[in-house]
Length: 401
Image 1 (cartoon, rainbow, N blue to C red):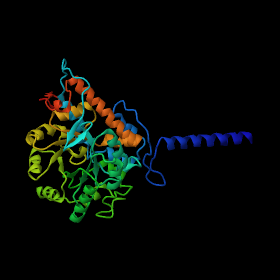
Image 2: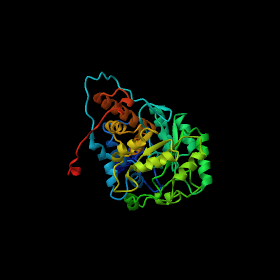
Image 3: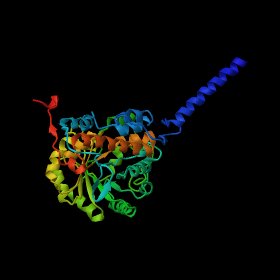
């Protein structure tokens, strides 16, 4: 009898330990009660920012992680986004007198602590229970800009409140319902958002094989559009995109300009001619991006197109850049190639999953310190000095003739 009681006590003890580990480590996977995102609230240690992906994969439910991490089709373009930075070198400089470089800069009249902002991405609630409100709090603490997707899983009001007056931009996929477009832009204005980002590279969703294999459907509502233009919970991203306007033209940039007093940023530029068209149509800034490799696979890495686009823009408007930024040298190379600031998406969401708003802050702090190190070794005291540095092109074996 005593032996039986002892065995039962041991089993109960082991079950309690397992429950405590899962509860306190935020290992929230899909279970019988539905989708469960992380609830962690802690600083995270970052040795290499690329480690965050594998760590986040352990705590974000499989379907949600596949949606966040994956690209389209073979994910060739997604990989090229990162490897494209290897096409150029930063030549070290010495005897420059650089001391404690400053990463402070500004964009569209907004002062920020570093030239790295949050890229708009849907459904941060897949990663953490605080969702975009948590991301906004972390971005505000880091002294940078929060870009908010209209497919966010927090309301615009909650995100604005979490930012406590820090700069925020609102990203819009034009709806077929023009009344909705006007209403949500007006809402963003009233809540204190500082710019409108018009995304133009997603007339349809890319073929995302990970989502198809996982039969991924949004397990939560996207409240800024749900019940207004489309049903979102239980829908895949292709269905969500299908409800947006699918035949954008330069006229649509002009229409959005007419709807708001805020600066309008045109996001998804991948060709110099399109940069010209966007600027002629009234864009106050352009955003060079291939949607993180999530749209047209087989396209160039975004960084491969940046110098040519920047040359065509010729400083007429500011340039924001994203797709593939993972470390300080990437930020440096993008700015030296014509970007004014860069944006990150996946690393921010991984940081959110691993530590909540504190994890988001840690991602930006790590990038800021890494960028400062690169600037010091390359002889750049300020972000403006990076813009005057000439990178050295090099031959990558697969590209050599």
